[in-house]
Image (cartoon, rainbow, N blue to C red; front, side, top):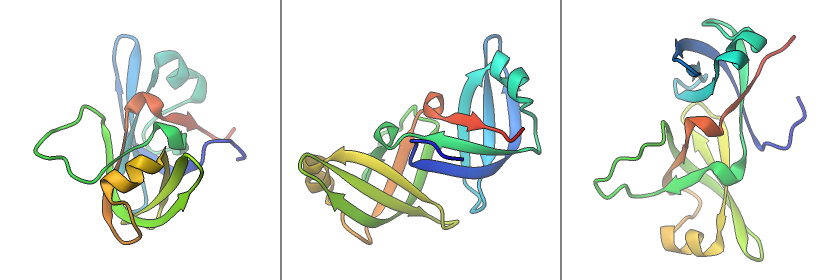
Length: 142
């Protein structure tokens, strides 16, 4: 699939929890991590979403927030994927940070250069990529 979302994760749906308007879809990745997507009930029906099927979970890099120290706080973001920084690509104002997850998948985040400095982001540093379930778009094959 060609899409502008830099983060594209192949996975299998482990669970679907249907609410009054939205549904929560749990996508298992090969490394054991889970990505949670919040999509409408209409999308569940239109895409034929159910446990056991393969999907592609898409997340745009600017939607990913990097955390290096939670300082005792908990976040409401359902997706919190810890890994190791593999690359820091500085631009004029922003940088792209690549984090490798335990299963080998990589997730990219776009942050300001100031954030790179403040968080001490460098190759080899442990970091957690966080994003809300509503930032996840699911795709299925026809």
